[in-house]
Image 1 (cartoon, one colour):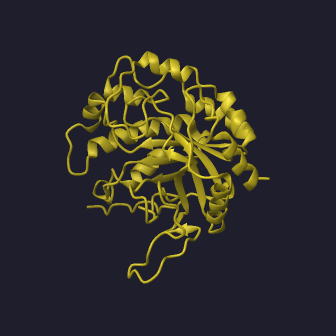
Image 2 (cartoon, rainbow, N blue to C red):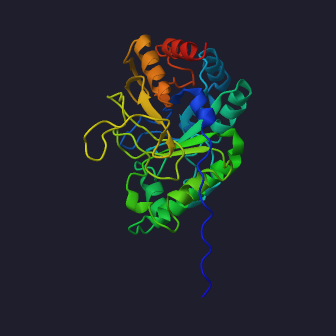
Image 3 (spheres, helix red, strand yellow):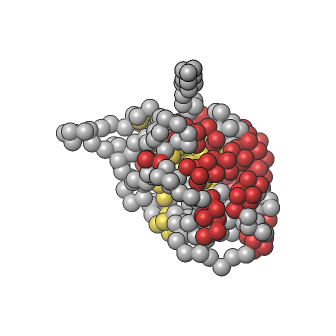
Length: 325
């Protein structure tokens, strides 16, 4: 029997541009609210009207004025409504009409942001939408211990998006792949095959798999390029303790081999106000984290028309001008 050919050695993407950005804006633009666990009363027509009314040029002008170097937006989350069409998803799930929008908002955002020098990244859940029973059942199929059917289906969905957007999309932040036993295997589906699907259209795009922890900050797998770094109430000055708990580890640019990054909230919750901190604090913490070689994504709310919440725009602008004078 022939010996299997070893897999091509994996190489993380170059994160130089990401580090040089120092910070960026992250938004939860969803059919419901972040982390909502109940089905919502919304029709595909309602969703399409909302997406069609999203003012891409108005948002791009605001991001330019605030000197935001990169922008991350949710494709969807628990509701099962997504802001871009996907034929693979529709073929698997079978909703008619589809809960994927007719308008490709990611493509339209890329066309508006790229000429302005603003990078675009996407948030995607790592699993089926928990509040859409039909989608969940059809994506998951007959579940084994590794949830192989779900992983293969979801990789196919993500691959379609990645191939369509190509280099217009600079990265991904993947929520939900918390259970390592589903992904840490030498054969696909695993973290590597998931990352390959996300990078199918742009091998240089950055990927992070959220580990579901607030602190300590660490990299969950060698197949991600930057730390997911989700934190909420705390703003750490070190990633955690050494194994013997004798002293704190120091932050450094590459944490467990991945670019140091955290994602936190500018308001009281994901996509919600009011502001938590004065401008001076937000600016100072961002500068501190940058001094360690890290990058911060600040989550702030959008209005339904796609414009930045007026209560948050002054702080975003102050931050942008302080870091990129």
